[in-house]
Length: 162
Image 1 (cartoon, rainbow, N blue to C red):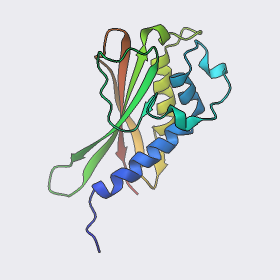
Image 2 (image 1 turned 90 degrees about the vertical axis):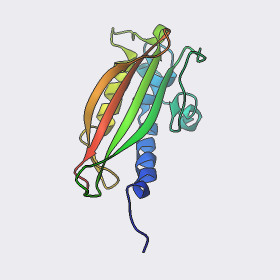
Image 3 (image 1 turned 180 degrees about the vertical axis):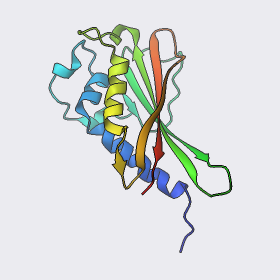
Image 4 (image 1 turned 45 degrees about the vertical axis):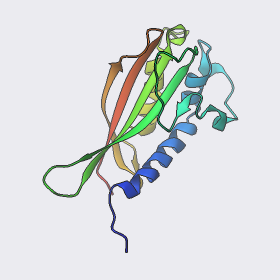
């Protein structure tokens, strides 16, 4: 039998996170519809067309060469060995939300980036699954992005593996 380690689970975690994101219509509308009331628009039927345009499940460098007036969601996973030689590791789901300044404010005065963060939190915070245990929001903070954009990062920590 093959020896198990944390990397055997990473693809399962990534796939489940992708599924959660791609089934959340409010999240997808906030990312891809450049209207000040995107949630009032019809559901998106071609969800797969949003991948690698608005939602990135593989590494993407976001720098000054990006000029689109749109929103982006970048995903990543962080693995941290737990000290003490237990062989256990901490796993974090990392979401980076980047919104063009022209799309920042919604019709009701709320901000697009924090509404995207709200949808991610609704999907992942305190959720159990055989795939990751329990997710808990660890932190949310602003990040530096090119001047035409605003960025925030959310990190969810997975605990209580079962």
